[in-house]
Image (cartoon, rainbow, N blue to C red; front, side, top):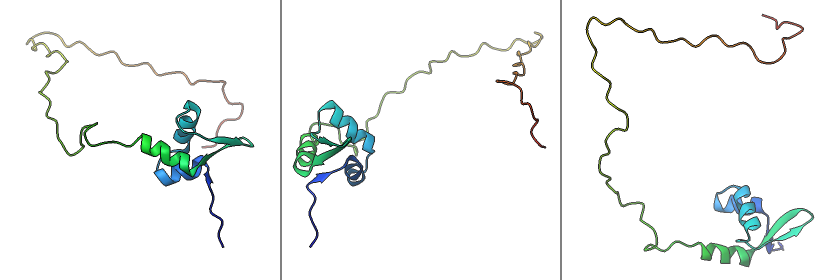
Length: 113
């Protein structure tokens, strides 16, 4: 006969919900999810997890549905238009980035080629 576990670890909850265990630990530390700490690791009771999920349940009227497409008005480009080219004007060369020195101390033994 298998023993039913009443307490779950953040790793098990994260795998069950499809989110990171770090997110579960963050909820615990913020006090949103009740847990007990045993020998340095958190354990969450199944009933507390169900209450947490029920409290974070989304009602259809509370948030926009993902199926609805919202059309935003077209924004003008924030970049200014370039000035027109003047014929006969000399080309201005763009500055080139100088070659950077290697960081850190030089190697005592060169790398094999």
